[in-house]
Image (cartoon, rainbow, N blue to C red; front, side, top):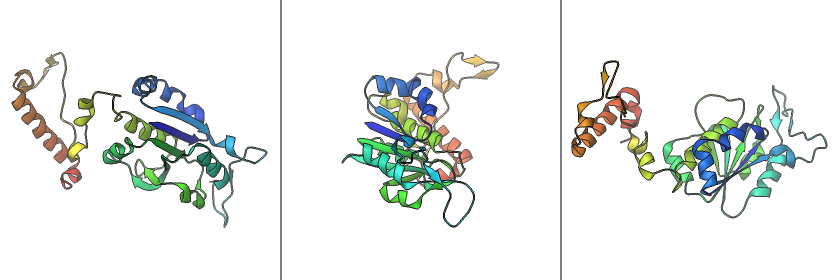
Length: 222
């Protein structure tokens, strides 16, 4: 998979690409992630990419030309263009699985007051990671990129994400490791029994209990 990220702040991605699972996925050539500075695509002699909104109002609006030029420079026949915006469809694990099967994804990071409306004409999907406002789309783009990359075949063990929270609309079950007794808090006996059928039953019961307590809305979808 290839992911191209268009941003006004490319340096924000430096550590993101050189740590943990993302770094290993790149080194294993499971994913290729390229960061593009939107300012490189403006024709303005002062590298300007934004201007005041027509009709008045606060803030600055990203111009369409540099965004169009940036997308056109990296797009090919397999490209799927995503616009990060709080007005987009709320992101979830189902969408992450769907995107993990794309060959090429282009992510546009917004900033300032917003986008020129005409930019929407060149995107395939608008995504929001939650009902809150960030100063820009960079952190949201990292969230989406991370969630997609870990699902690509060969990046992590398949079993590591098959039981993730939100799969089958259930939160994940509790997990424990050594020591068996920590400050009086003990590992449940069933996990030490070696009886895999009982362990699986216990885990499923805990998934349902936890989801009912914390996210009952997910159970309504089952």
